[in-house]
Image 1 (tube, protein in one colour):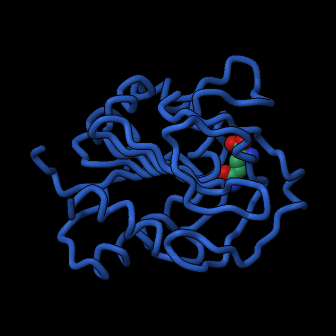
Image 2 (spheres, helix red, strand yellow):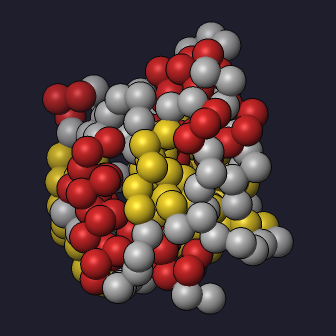
Image 3 (tube, protein in one colour):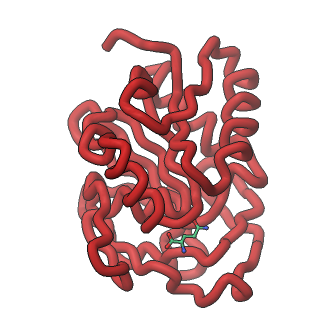
Length: 197
Ligand code: GLN
């Protein structure tokens, strides 16, 4: 694969800045000469991988479709989705709004807003295969089932809160919480899987 040395962050709304800051910190920690590309339109798509931030999955769907990149995103080989971004990756979602579509790249089923309303948001310490972290859940989805090729990266009690799926050369990582707010571990892991194979 020929690298562009650019990682995209879908930049319509949500915690875009937080992902950019954390990604840049992770590049530094890994000594990678990689740049962040804010992705809004087709011209932004010369990237090695994409981060889809939290926000509202309905908005992410609508705006990416309006800009003509919804279908094109399905061809990006490495995608890391957090919260609404995890919803975007799922094959099947529950409690979707009418007409809401996802990229359907990962063999996971996700229930939107399953932890309750915005005011039911919370944070807690969790174990992950990458280390212990503080996990922030903001009107989070629940990953309710995963396919046999999906590997769990973190659980909170019985709930899977982070997982990954490798399909041929492609890799997708989903987290129902917001790692970009508290840790560089997930970004570093994602970038290592792309650039240090
Ligand atoms: N509730 C949002 C959705 O359904 C996700 C929340 C978030 O990304 N923090 O898309």
